[in-house]
Length: 80
Image (cartoon, rainbow, N blue to C red; front, side, top):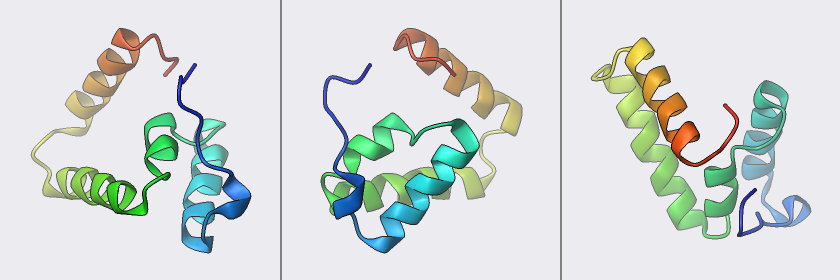
């Protein structure tokens, strides 16, 4: 469980609401790290930009990226 609560989703702008609704539809809930980062739109946009660029670059094969995500989730005691 996150120690820092995410922002009030009703107070987020439409773009962020759509992002978190899509995450909830795909994963069952918004992704915790991104949800917490949404307290600061600048940080949230930076995170999304960085991870989006990494994903699009193809530098990490999908299987390796998935393995890394699982490993980080395991370290953080977060269900994946």
